[in-house]
Image (cartoon, rainbow, N blue to C red):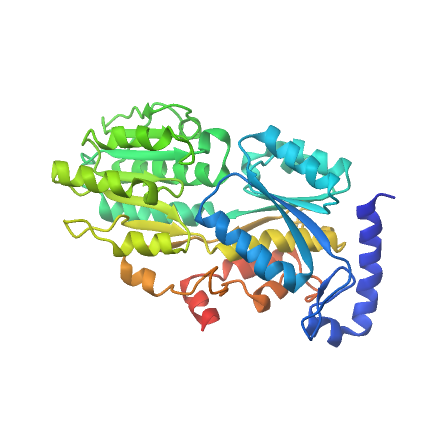
Length: 423
């Protein structure tokens, strides 16, 4: 019997004991697999979880703070964090190193593949992905008993946020020119694929466009591409990582042409491009509207509060992940699998690996941003997904938890409910 099956058997026995003294288990959040006691002391088995990262930005910094400073001491787990992983080969090496270090599970923010799931299976390690099943049919349809599922953005909701903003902020004829940073979509980064698709769909719907290539192909372009369309609108896709030295010069050159008054990004790029955007606006006497992914951070505060000579902020619209909600869901899926309830808490009604979804939050003004002060603040340690929220998703504190109940909780998170939770 491999180590995960032994652990699952132990979890079943612990569950029976916990039900006998349910009041104590439920109130302390503890179980034989780890947790917090009433006096704050961690108890039981300490799980070790590897976290594979694809980027180095505010979101990743916030995630690490959430895992290290809140999740780890509260639920008696230890995390191993990767450096930026450029490709699947690097992810594979990281996972192998984690296994050698005694990891019990991997949370993968880079890959979304059956190769990684199989590697984990062979070593009795739980595997959880930040992403969507549509991008990994072999993983969705395969037999991977230790794969605990996906967690990612609600694509329809995300597309609507960009679509609604584009509808309200673009011209009637689309003559302003659109520069779209597809970031790491060409390398399979799920978040960047989702947002790039949403932008292209939003423009398509706004102007009734017919693209010569399918959107599914366009989001994967690996070089600068002008999107051919029946209305002759200038839509340019620029792939690549802001972490590479060549990225900013390339995007700057395009912006400096003065052909684009709309810069739309699938990743967090507004902070890198703020200076060149301001310079181009001053040189051409234009206002370049900037829409981007973001994370709650001082970087975002600065972008909305720092105005150029024309009174425009560095960014006009962002969609922000309630980062701790995403991170809580991938942790919950992983933790529940480690505690032996993968069949109920990590599977949908068809017995397939669960697909957990969260909604992005849109912000388009300093006033809207001010309302979110203190949300997922790593420095202050104030998290949207605090202990009361996370406990609802864990079998050790909620024995009746299911994948469906977790998704219901995730769907309930919006601006109003967060405001209420944060007091």
